[in-house]
Each structure stands twice: as structure tokens, then as C-alpha cells.
Length: 145
Image 1 (tube, one colour):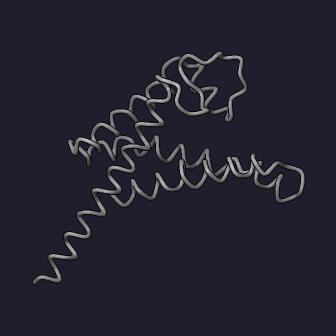
Image 2 (image 1 turned 90 degrees about the vertical axis):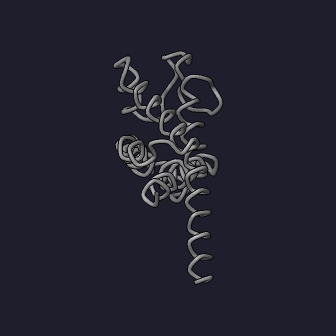
């Protein structure tokens, strides 16, 4: 009986850790839209700056779509960090997570350019950070929860 209890305790700690990591990531990503913390587009940026993805540029141009995705990230972060309505918010925010993963994984040109000898190490590293952490890890964590 003690072994099962230890396993349950380990699982509960893992769920708590993943919930907190995912909540913090959503808070950083969503909060960045309203208060600049990361080198990604933000509500107050000049719209003439080049954006990483044409999809993001189109979402921002609608005036509401990208903002709604960022509000969803902040609400999901609050849900995960406060442990309130977690299953509902995980399901509701899955479309944002899946879209982010697809955009991050699909735009592999910086990595391919670097592998071909024409791109920069910084560009390849930035792509890997996006694809692995901001896209892949978030999708895996959300799927786990």
C-alpha cells in the first residue's frame, strides 16, 4: 500500500509541476501582448515592424483575433496557477496551443538555411527554441494534463 501511495504522490507532484510550468509559459506568452517582456509582437509595437509569421500579421490586422488568443492564454494561465476550471481551460485553449505549435514547427527555414551553410547560428537557435519550447513542450505539457 505504501508503494502505491508513493506513486500517487509522485504523480500528483508531476501534475503540479507541469501545471505550474505551463501556467507560467502561458502567462509569459499572453502577458507579453499587454506588457512587453519577450521579443515577440505586442499590443504597443509599431505595426510596420516585420513580423515572424504572416499568419500572426493577419491575426493582428483583424484587430481582435490575436488579442483574443492572448486573452485565452492569460485566462488559461490564471486557471492553471490557481487550479480553477483547469480541464475546461485546457480544452478551450487547445486551439491556440495547436496553432502555435504548427506555426513554430512549420517555419523551419532558419534551421534549413543554417544546415545548408547559409543561415546564422542565432537564427537556427531561435527556431529551435520556438519549435521545441514554445511550440512542442507546450503541446506536450497540455496533452499530459
